[in-house]
Amino acid sequence: MADAPEALSANSGYAVSIANGSYNWYATAAIRSRRMYRLSEISVLVVSTAIPTTAAVSPHDAIMPAILGAIVVVLSGLRAVFHWHDNYLRFSRAREAVESERRLYHTSAKPYDDPATRDQVLVGAISKIEQAEMGGWQKVAAHKPKP
Image 1 (cartoon, one colour):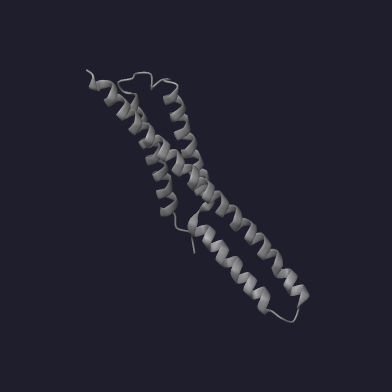
Image 2: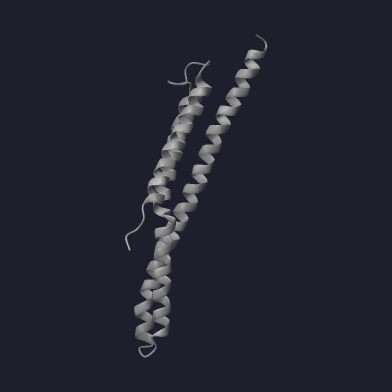
């Protein structure tokens, strides 16, 4: 019986580390995706606005507007390929779901009120969140834009 508290704390440490690791990954990924989404949106706006400006400044030179137009096409393609906005929303949703489970766990609220099963329940809940998020990613990745 003397080993039971140590085993429980070892399991708790593992379960909490799984939850914390998942939370940290989703938080970092959401921030990165949000930054890339915003950067790409702002870049498209700035470069798009520069096209008529360069055409007005140098009406007989089509090289600069053509280059800027090509940059807009590339940026738009990158947005479609990397799905930064979709990722930001999915990762944020997963992060908040993990945080909800962590709060319930730390307050010993249902379903974490039974010390004998709370660690298994936490790991199971985190796994379900991660699987659901992976399902969302698969839907995004499987969607092919129409030519």
